[in-house]
Amino acid sequence: MLKAGKIISKGRCVSDFIIFSIDVFASLFIVVFGCLILLVIYFYISDVTQSKQAIRKNYPVIGRFRYFFERQGEFFRQYFFAMDREEMPFNRADRSWVYKAAKNVDRTTAFGSTQSLEVTGTVMFMNCAFPTLDEEALEPSAVTLGPHCPNPYITKSLFNISGMSFGALSKPAVRALSQGAKLAGCWMNTGEGGLSPYHLEGGADIVFQIGTAKYGVRDEQGKLSHEKLKQIAAHEQVKMFEIKMSQGAKPGKGGMLPGKKVTAEIAAIRGIPEGHDSISPNGHPEVKNPADLLDMIAAVRETTGKPTGFKAVIGAYAWLETLFAEINHRGIASAPDFITIDSADGGTGAAPQPLMDSVGLPLRESLPLVVNMLEKHGLRERVKVIASGKLIVPSKVAWALALGADFVVSARGHMFALGCIQALQCNKDTCPTGITTHNERLQRGLDVADKAQRVANYNKYIHYGAGLIAHSCGVFSARELGRQHVRVVQENGLSEPLDKMYENYQ
Image (cartoon, rainbow, N blue to C red):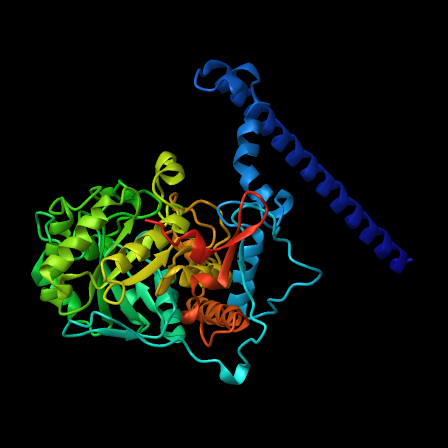
C-alpha cells in the first residue's frame, strides 16, 4: 500500500508540473501575442501618419515587407537565384574559385564550363601545338622598379595586394593580409589611410600610398611633410611610394571615412581629429598639370630614396601625351617608376553610384592605351605598369599581363580570400565577416592565422593558374604572355587577336 501511495503521489507531481508548464506557456503565448498586436497597432499608426513612403501609407504594416524583401534580395539572388556567371560585381563562379584556392581544396570543374564562348568580349587564350613542358617551365623573371633610385625594388611577384586602408579595413583584416603577403612573397599596399603597426606586423613588403589628404605624412595644415616621409621611408619594409590621383570606385572624388570608424588609434595614424568624418580632397591641391605631377614624384623620390609612381583611373588621356613628352624633355630619370592603372570597375571604396557606374575607362581600353603611349615615347622599359580592377582569377591576371601589365594588384580578390561574402555592407560598419568593421564582436570571427594562410594560398594559386595558361600558350612563364596569345570574341561571333585589335590603338 505504501508503495502504491508513493506512485500515486509521484504521478500527481508529474501531473501538476505538466499543468503548471501549460499555464506558463499559455501565459507566455498571451503576452507575446499581445505584444505582437501592440506592435502591429504601432506600425499601423506610424505608417498611416508618415508621408515619406507612399507604399507604407497606402498599405500600412504589409507595405513594410516590400522594403524588407528589397534589402534581402541581394542575398537571396547571390545564393539561390543568380546563375554562375551573371551576378555583379563578382559572379559565383569567380568567387567560388577564390574561396577554393584560399582554402587549398580542389579547384577543378566537371562536365564543361559555364562560361559562354559566344558573348562579345569573351577572352580566349590560344594554346600552342607544342606546349611548354613542366620541366621547361620557369618562375616569373625578376623586375626592377626605380633603377635610378638609391634603393630600387626588385621582385618576382606578379600578383599583389592593392590599396586598402586601416580604418576602412579592420585591425585583424590588415594583420591577416600583412602576414599572408609575407607568406606569399608579394607586396601589400597601405591604401591612403597611412602606415599602421598592423601593416608592418607580418614583415611583408609595403607600398605606401599617398592619398590626396596626405594621411600619415601630413603636417598640421594638411600639406605633405617631408620629415614624416623620411620617417616612413626609414622602415626597411616600405619599398615604394604611390601617389594616388584617383581610384576606380570614385574617379574625381575624394574618400570618406565615417566618424564612427575614426577611433583614437586611426586618428593618430592619419593625423586627424578623433570621431570626425575623414574626408579627402578630390585631388592633390599642388598638382594641377603633368609638370606638377613630375615635381611631386621627384620630391617624394628624393626625400625617401625609394621608387615612386602614381595611381590613376584613365579617362581623358591627352594629358598623358604631355606627361610623357615632359619626361623626355627633363630626362629619363624624371619618369615615374611605375603607373598603377585602376579600372573604372574598381570598387573597394564606398562611392556615389553615378561615379561607380559611369566614370572612367575600363582596363580593356585604358591598359593597352597607356602601354602603347609609353612605347610610342620610348618609355616602356623605364616605366613599369601595374593593372588593377576586378582581376581576381588566373585568366584575368594572365589577360592583363598579355595586354602589357608588368604586375597585377587586387583588393577585392584578397578580401574574398579573407572570407568576404559580398554582403555589400563595407560602408556601414556592419560587415558580417569582420573585414570592414570596427565592431569587436564581428571581428572575433576573423582568425588572423587562418586567414593569413588563406591569403597566401590564394596568391599561390593565382600564380600557378596564370602559369598553366602561359605554358599552354607555349611560353615559359606568365610574364612572357603577349597580345598574340589572346583572341577576343567580336559582335559577329568571331574572335580577333589582341595584337590586331590594339595595333594602332591610342
